[in-house]
Figure 1 (cartoon, rainbow, N blue to C red):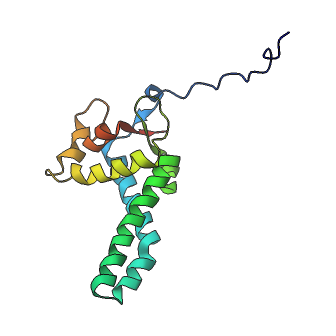
Figure 2: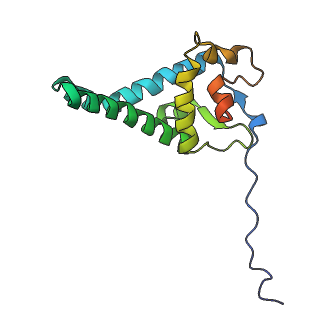
Length: 150
């Protein structure tokens, strides 16, 4: 018996296929977006309160910090958990369209930024999911993600 025999771990189980998940519809995604917005609002509220008592450059810096912090927190949670803790409790998750894994923080940041772009053309990027077979918005397509219900 060689030193390599019997020392290998079994292969990991396959990841759940995206095909086994129901795609999230417009209204549940809309509610999940509102829930995420409220979550980020509460997280960034202390910075916003401080900015009320400042002006000029300090106010601009605090407002920018609030936006960047909000995007980072949401992207981090989306990348690791598929969304904010509240979105996950609703069973609405953002996953990779190919293998069903969470998309990671970098792709989540990209997806969030692209979601703002999706809304620039008469909200058409958001409404696209209404007639798309995979129920993907433009920012889902660009980030290669889907939103599912589990």
